[in-house]
Image 1 (cartoon, helix red, strand yellow):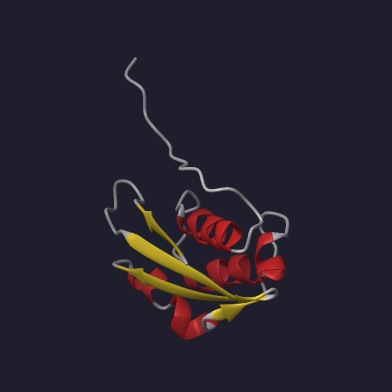
Image 2: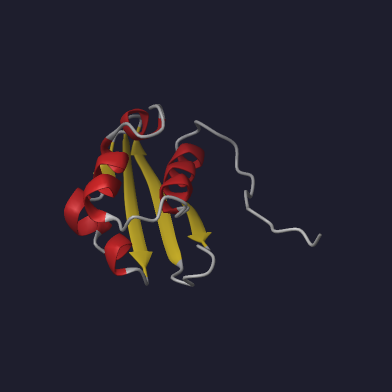
Length: 107
C-alpha cells in the first residue's frame, strides 16, 4: 500500500491518497481531502480502478481528467490529479517512488 500527502499550496486544503493493488489490473484508492470538491472523489468515481486505464493516458484524457472537468473548480494548477496518479503508478509498479514538488526560489 502506498500513501501520499498532497500539499496544494496557498489554499492549504491538504489531500491524502492511499492506493492498494488488489490484482494486476485492479487498484483500490481512498481519497481524503479538506477540499470540498476533491472530498467527493470516491463518492463520484468509486474506489476501484484499472491502473493502466488511469495512469497510461495522455494529460487531459482518461476518467480522472473527466472527473476534474466536471467536479473540480477552475484551478488548473491544483496538484491533486498528479499526486493521485503518481500514487497509483508507484503502488502498481508503473513508476518508482520519488518526491516531487514545486519550490519557489528567492531572487
